[in-house]
Image (cartoon, helix red, strand yellow):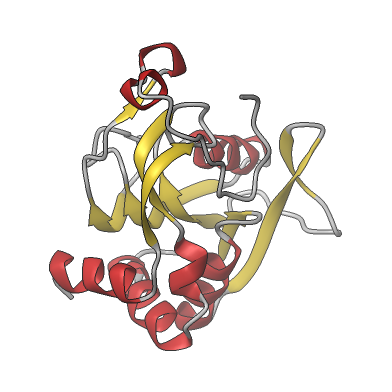
Length: 192
């Protein structure tokens, strides 16, 4: 799939939003990728996640892990296509951790999946979980890279779509200066 075809999927599903958005990182932006709106359609989910799965198909992957909530569908579908185990980490007291009896074995090779990366905060937390269990990070796969490759996880990484979407510190945000309404459309609560 080309980047234009991927953008077309986002536009058809109403997942590429324009306005004034509060991102999970605390930054502000005029664009927001609501991947959940794309992932509600199984045919889009399968196509986008196939790009990630195909990129890591020849790598050693024992398990796929994702942060809840955004990465759940992506991680599950990539794991299904690779025929590997899938687990996820959940936020507890503002920190991602393994719950529900999920474990990572020593020397296990783990692929980290996510829907959208802006600063990579959740992915970096997942990488630390993998490393703290003396396991190996096989790589990082995600659908949208809002940083256009600026975020480097120091492991093989792949995104289906790279875009350099501007984001601003709140005190530097031109949209705030225009007094546009600030919207927080994601799943994670952040401080305004």
